[in-house]
Length: 74
Image (cartoon, rainbow, N blue to C red; front, side, top):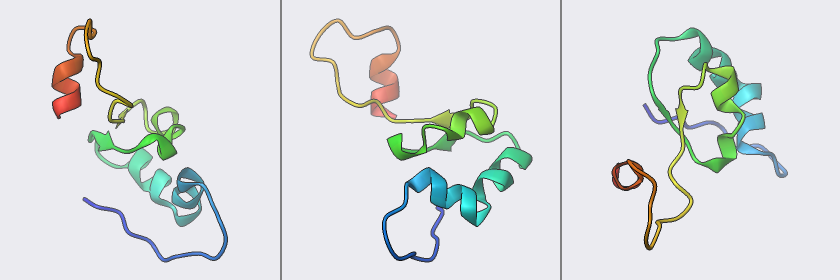
């Protein structure tokens, strides 16, 4: 599912807009699905039982933690 919403005037954080539109409540009450979101949705994990998965910020050049390469590629 891809979430699209109406535009709003002025600047607003992504997570704030998601809360105001009711998306966060729908995700929290819905089925247990993995939520792929960028860093703009950092508070979403706490409100949805930790189901938010964010892409890594950067790729390690060497000594990456176990499983990091798989998560980066996904």
